[in-house]
Length: 424
Image (cartoon, rainbow, N blue to C red; front, side, top):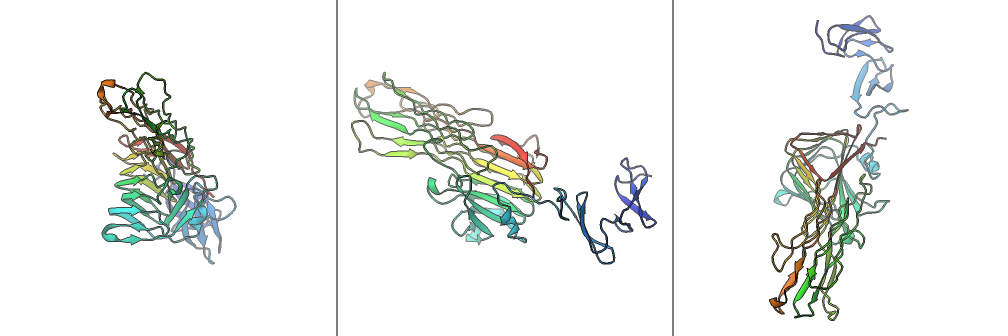
């Protein structure tokens, strides 16, 4: 007769369980080392014992009756009768352990803001505020500080994640979930949530000066920020002189996202000319995308949108790290960390160069457009070349098999890498 493969049917005597065979056509006799229980089949443990076998933790009472079983999605620990646990990236397991029964966090309705302030305030509709266990952690391998939130089940709807002001004080965001994580609407990362800026990975600032011919203002476009690759260079104003382009920033960060670092800012702007030092130098311009890590002991399901895109003006794409026993990208979902387009005009004009395009999963960032200086335009004219686009950012997925499921309509617009989920 037909049966479900592996299903227990009945005990035969004290030590034999009748179990459906792999083809589901009949029952096999299975010898039970600890005896057969009429309700559950082969007992996994002796009296007053807890064991972990074949991915199941079982506890027996003093009479030898099996009182509880727990499936272990990550298998059994080698030398202890317990399931293996998730070991979150960036050395954060201790914060899960400190909170054995964390609260659920439901941000699926209305608009929510994760502020990453000193208190770890999460603000919702009607001025509602929520506090869950949270910690500010210094990354031992460098990068922005991490703001870590510990929850049970996590539901993300319309959520805007920001952080303290200033490129030197941004914070990457981490959610550690004991339960399931779902993304149903739009989760957007601001540059203050983990973007970085430094003279190496940020583009060179754009530059302006007065044309010697008639005093018109000429402006070179700034370079785009770096992430997976270098940012693109800014354009020039062709006035017959040889001038170097404002180069893009070099690549930054690592694919594992350890440390958890977002995209790099674009170059700012220098309006001090050789003969006039009264202007201002702004080293850094548009911010890169922020950085987010979501670690779950169970599942992560993205049904909506997650965006760590670089800002318009040439910011590099940021970073999104998702890790769990199961990670799914549902139909029509979108997860992105693209570079921002540079400064300029689209379409270009006589006085304004084309914006460089930001990098995507399929295209490298492009240089800002160069334009020509026209002497006849007069001394009050301004000519500004386009700025370079920012580099594309990263998506990282860690699971036990280094793989994930994605519907054919799901979009992952970044450089995507996978790794093995660490356990402990």
